[in-house]
Structures are given as structure tokens and as C-alpha cells.
Length: 145
Figure (cartoon, one colour):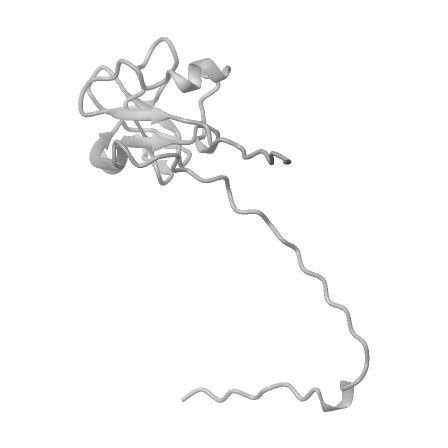
């Protein structure tokens, strides 16, 4: 059984004190809509990969997951967690998000997706079952009477 001893603040009662907090904003929301609903599947990842979480992914010549390259490798989904595979291991299956409406600002885009247009169109034309829509969140404006 653990023994918990609360601190004794009796000798500091009435003495002014100021604390400080560091407030870190959470990352911008990933979801940007509800149709099509979000879903994914476990897919095999190519060997020797070190892919950051939320990176758009495509398929290599063997049908294994690799980072997408705009104009070369069609984006078919993205990973929610970081992916690390080594050269000597057998291929591992990781969960890949394949459908849903997502905020493009929340993804970790490879360098080849260097414009907003490329990011918004990254998943267009991908084979089924990919149904990913990129939609930026709208900021509200106040309209005065």
C-alpha cells in the first residue's frame, strides 16, 4: 500500500504567490468532415522505411506502402502513426487511413507537395477503396449589425 503525505502549506498561508503556466496549443484538427466516413486498412509496408505519422502514402512497384511522391507515386492514404521498418525484417502491416475528409494542414506532406493545389488534389484519381477528401477548415467572421 502506498503512503501519500500531503505537503504542509501552513507556514505559507497569506503570503502572495504567483505561478506560471506554459500553454501549448494542440495540433490543428485532423478531421474536416464526416462523409465519407473515416476508415482504414492494414497494409504491408516496404522494407527500410522511416515514415513520420500523418504522411501521405503510395504503393511501390511491389504493392507495398512507401511515402507518396507527387507526379510519381499516387497517394492512396496516410498513416496515423510513425512507421519504421528495417532492411532485414519481413514486411510489416500498419494501419493506413483510406477514406474520410481531412484537414490538409494537419498532414505531414512530403517535399514534392509544395503547393496548396498539389495537397488538395493529392488523393484525386486514386484507385478504390481510397476516398479521401482534403478540406481546409473555414474560419469564422463576425458580422456586425
